[in-house]
Every structure is written in C-alpha cells, then in structure tokens.
Image (cartoon, rainbow, N blue to C red; front, side):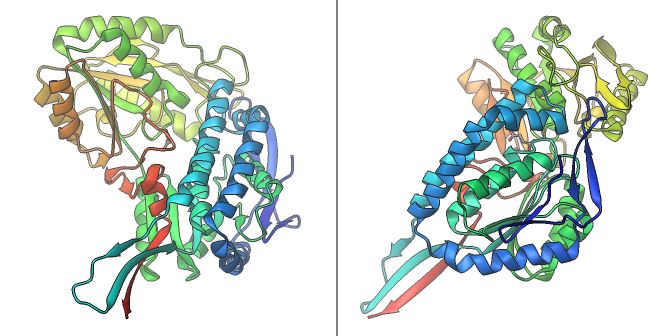
Length: 474
Ligand code: SIN
C-alpha cells in the first residue's frame, strides 16, 4: 500500500523518498508514505491558511454536516480501519474496532458541540455602552499525534478544531501513519473542502520545526512524551503559540480494603492491559491495602494467566506486540530492576522475540517497593507492580509522589473514603471503580508534567477558540 501527503486537496509526494511501515507482530511491510520535511509542511500550512477564511465563515451547522458525514463514513469503514490499525500498530483487532468507534464518537460529539459555542453579554458599568464576549476560531492548527492510538488521537484533535472553524495540518507518527492517511481519505470523501485538512508524513524534527516556527500556525496540539512536549513548549515561545500538550503519565491504582475485589480486578485488568499497557492513562503501579493484599493478588493472577499474547489479527489475542525493540527493552529493564531488588514475580516476568518482533507476557510483580524504577517511571508495557500499603493516607502519599499527573484510579465501595482519595489525588483524570474513564464528552488531560489543556468535552472545543471582548458605545 503506497500512500501520500494530502496538501490542499491533492495527494502529493510521489517523487519523495519512502518511509516503510512494518507490522510490529511480523515485521512484514504494510505500506509506505513519503518522507516529507520543511517545504511540504510549509505548503500544507499555506493551504490551511488560505482555506481558513471560507471554512471559518461557514455556520456551525454547515461544519457539523461535514463532520456527521465523516462520522458515518468512519463507522461504515469500521472493520477496514480496524484491520489497518492492527496491521501497523499491533493492538488486538477487537481493541482496534473499539478505537474506531471511540474515534468516531469524537467526530459525532463535536459535530454537535460546535453548535454550542456561545459568547455572552456583560452588564455595563455605565449607560450608553454594550459589552459582549465573542468566541472565534483560533486559526490554523498544527497537530502531532502518537502511534499508540493511531485513529483516536487524531480524531480527538481534528473534530473539535474543524467544528470550531479552524483548519488543520497533521503530522502522524512514523510508526503508524497509514490509519491517519485513511482517515484523511475519508475526510476527502465527506466533501470537506480542500485545504481544510492537510497531512504531512516524514521527518519529525523538520515537520515539527516548521509547524512550531511558522507564524500562520496559531495553535499546536501534541500528544506524546513529556520530553518532546517540553521542547515544543520552548519552540512555541518564539511565536507565542497557543499550545495543548497531552504528555506522559505514571498512573497509580489504589485498591482500598473496602473495594469489591472482583470489580477491582476487572478494573485493573482493563486499565493495565489495554493496548498491552501502551496507553498514557493505563495504570503503571498498584497500591493495595494489606487486609486484602493476598486475596486481590490471587484473583488478579488467575485472570491475568488467561490472557493470550500474540498477533493482534489472530482471534483470541488479548495482548499484541510491543511497538518496537526499544519499547520491549524498557519493559524488560523495569522488570529486571524490580526482581533484582526483591520483588516477586507472580505471573509472566519475561518476553520473547519472534522474527524481529517483540512480545511481553502480562506480568504481575508483588512486594514491590517505592525506590524501584518501575514505581518511578512510565513502563508502557503489560506489567503490574504491586506495593502493599497500610493506610489510605500512605496510598495517597505514594500516588502523588511523581512529577506526572495524568490519570489515577481508586477502587473503594465507600463514598466517604473513595471521595477523600479522589479529592486528594493530583491528577487530571480519576477513575473511581472504573478502569477506562475516557469518553468523547469528558475532559481528558493531565496536571503537572503530564500536560497543558484538555481534549474532549466542552473544554476540548474551547482549546480551539479565541475570546474577543467587544465594548460597544451606543
Ligand atoms: C492515550 O494513551 O493517551 C489515550 C488513551 C485514551 O484516550 O483513553
């Protein structure tokens, strides 16, 4: 499959060097995209800049009808998009299908939310004056998206941007650009006017460099590592760009001794092993109170042993491959470090390589202690390290002892104790008896070094709007 850039309504880049996209489960070639750089990105930004006046002048209802068409097309192509996603990213097919529906839900929800971008009037402090607050689209948006959710992370940016009246240039990840290209093909099929959506694949540093330095780009939205996010923040300073960052996490899961243990086990499995643990909000470390420690671990282990590792296209696969060797090695490093410092392996504890592809078995480590690497860094793999805690306060203290603040989880049947923990957690998202809290209509994003801004929910469209105060003398 040979795919290209989409700039000003044209598929281009046929003459450029090609980037190969390989299946992480087999190493086989899935397709190619062009290696674009500064000049292609500049053309895409120019196209978005030229398309902005007409697109932003449409009514919210007109923009909504394009997005509704796109939503319909995404759902019509659900199976095909899911298969492509599994081929290039590796996640199990049922998860890919879930991601297509999740992605389409952003498009549908923002198609409606665009109609609710209200301003307001302010009572004036003297007669002969009217005071208004108006909202307007921020302008051209640049988006850089990650490989772990190849469709959802674009949809969550594209849908609110377009609904707000912005035009869009996206740089998808080099590991998984094909799903993004297919989504943009569907944008074309939905009739979205040329120049409104543009896509450039290729050299991250060049494409990002142009997006960050070009003054026509008024908003940058990025999902990826905290390290890269910090660099983008620095670069945004030059043109004082509006910026949204969804960065790394290191989510704690707290299981209190009044939890429904079966519910907690299911919640921890859903959170921890979603996408093989390659999810920014997935639980990275588990704190279980001593009274239920052994029972929780035994039930968690029984269910974890049933999980099947393999090619995501094969029926029954629960955990696909790690995205690459580096990802695999980080997981292995965290596990070995914990074992060498006295943790006990309850399930898994190893991975394997097959024809250049890397798989890690779902792993549970018990008697983990706070100083171990895995309790201090994001693992991005299917490993659940469990630390025993005595009190609610001790669990809260450990949970907050990190520079990250994306997602956290608590399992408790007590309204009083659960609510106390929720209030004390310094995190942008908290799942209380819920391992998968994400939804199109809810704000998603982190505190501290996990990011700036929110995607999804009403906050998700606010991120693409400017506020204009108008004072009218009568
Ligand atoms: C992420 O890994 O950041 C995406 C997870 C989600 O949207 O639930």
